[in-house]
Amino acid sequence: MKKILYVLGSFIIVLLIGINAIFYYENMYVKNYIPVSQEVYDTTKKQNTSTPAREKTAADTTKSSSVQLKNQPKEYKATISLVGDVFFNGYLLKSYYNRQTQSYSFGNIMENVKDITYADLSIFKFDSTLTSNLPVSTYGKYNAPKETLGLLKSAGFNVAVLSSLHIFDGKRQGLEDTIKNLKEAGISSVGVRLSPDEHTSKVFDINNIRVGVAAFTKELPNVYLGSNSSYKDYVDILDKDTIRNRLEYLKGLNCDIIIAYANWGYENSINPTSEQKEFAKELIKYGADIVIGTHTHTIQPFEKIQVEDGTSGKREGIVFYSLGNFLCDQTVIFPYNRFGLTVRIELTKKDNKLTKKILVEPIYIFRKTRINGNYYDFMLLKAKDILNRSDVRQSYIRYAKKLLDEVQSQLQNLQ
Image (cartoon, rainbow, N blue to C red):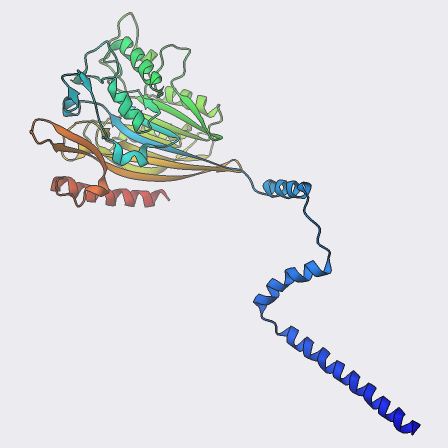
């Protein structure tokens, strides 16, 4: 009997061990075939069960954040808008003059291009004076009314390039008044000065990005200021020594990027001269990164050029030989005077390295006859937005299509 009980007990023990073994291997088999997605989610649970959870303290959070910030270098951004010639003449003045109030009201002329002109630094070339030393004039001597300042500010402009053929139309007093009136409107001036102690070039600090702006003009042989005073005392002329001195000054102020405006070329010409090309090389050689040409009142090509920097190295820069007109009433040569280029530069600075993205948008100065037929309504439009308009001349639409294709092609060559 004892033997039977012993055998039976042994059998039961073996049976229990076998059952346990079967369950163990079955569990191992199932675990090995859990889907990967579930494995990922289960990992957190395992960590929580194997190690007791500890609440995060404020010190832990601060420490984690500081380490994270250390590993990520700071990034700074800035935007720059650059446009061509602005002057108020012809029907652009006549159409917006109120005889009863004897004042000007320019309405929303720039409404459709504000997404272009609004930027951290928005620069236009002012081909006029703003002075009480002259009557408001539209031809020969250019003098704009003060109401134009409200229009320019409404479009976001904050820097005016004054080195032009017309800045001395009101003599030295006209120059002084123009600088003063612009300043009171919150618009800085570059390219001119009132005394030898001042600099014609300026540096603008935008979100830890330093932008240098210089401006030059070709010789002004017909300017007479009297009192043994020369226009060269007040404006920077396009010559090699002046270019080198002004750009060396800006480089010494640790500029991240230098923009140089150049008032040059022949009026109403669509091709740059050999002189423009030579001065462009000088400007790039001595430190300009972007060269903006004005004065021709017509659009000229743009390109990237590479030059010897004088120290057995090379420098690259982008030259816009002329942006053409931005706002005026000029119809000397059809259809070119009615179009201009706008340039927008998006800057990013990271690890002390500056990268730039350049956008170019052609614009059209739209002039539509009012119902009474004596005056016009003006509006700036993007060239791409006139292609399907029935109230724009076909010759302008054809030129706009050609211009848009040329701009796209030239932009590809900048890459």
